[in-house]
Length: 178
Image 1 (cartoon, rainbow, N blue to C red):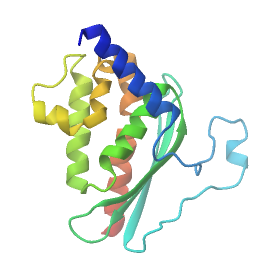
Image 2 (image 1 turned 45 degrees about the horizontal axis):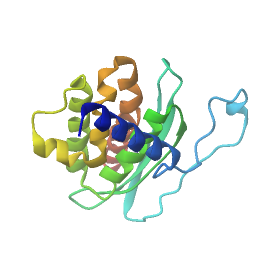
Image 3 (image 1 turned 135 degrees about the vertical axis):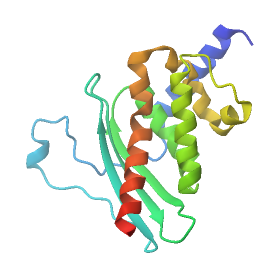
């Protein structure tokens, strides 16, 4: 497969993931609207009584992408991400990255999720070269399609937006357990 064919396939996967995002729910106020702070509150309730929730709102001022990531982490050790949902809007890259992140992280232990986040971050630092570790690339599954995005510094923040929200919301959930 030529480089151009591979790039086209990557673009198709990103577009599909942004059109049919996994884990997207309507629960956060629309901060882009003029009266967002004057409307009612939106909350997500923990559906698992044995989980602790955490939530993080992320905003990219460069392009206007924003996402609120809600996570529910199991109370027993090892802590598992039992539920991961998000609400937000933005470009196809940010929306697709959030969708792929849900598929990769939900059901994983916190340690596994943080390792995946670190691997994805390294991919974004590769500037299109990818990773030197084949098993690390395989661990990203569909997330590897963002390798092409890493060539464009202005788009890297779009791809990382949800991942930063996931890490922050997990940290909040874990600190609430203390």
